[in-house]
Length: 211
Image (cartoon, rainbow, N blue to C red; front, side):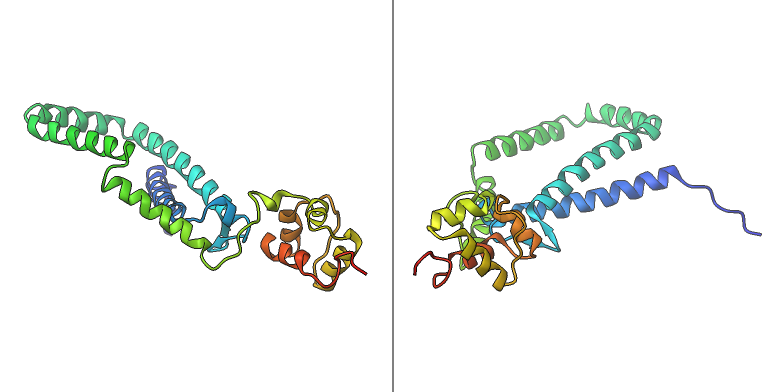
């Protein structure tokens, strides 16, 4: 009878470290192109079923996981790592030119990024352009964080009657349980975006208070 193999902690750590790195890299790339909050929250932007807040949370948590697991990995391999580090330090004393070059490139990248010099500033500009491109051809919120306004506030801004707006929403398949809830919450309850909800509210013809 084959003996059951014991759980390998080192193997578990190695796999976790690798997977955390992959997720952290993927989420970092997504956050590089994700639309600004004023667009993402307004149109209920999602990628692979995850919102901007979801991707930011995933990136942050997996970054912490990566660091924690890396420290555990270092703990289990401290003796090997220590010997390796000492040997490299000894060799490094004979590689002064390489050390200076490594320090130089690190300083150049840091300063270039800090002062937005090419190609570092260009890289960030490309990211901003990709973020802003999400606004093209899409409805834009009339004011920052309109999705956080309550239904009553929005209806009042339109100069409409609340009862007629609620009736109009219901006829469009939108259920409203509380008029003091935000557009974001009401939209989420009904599986639509705040921009779609706002568009329904703003339609003229009924709910305007005109007789």
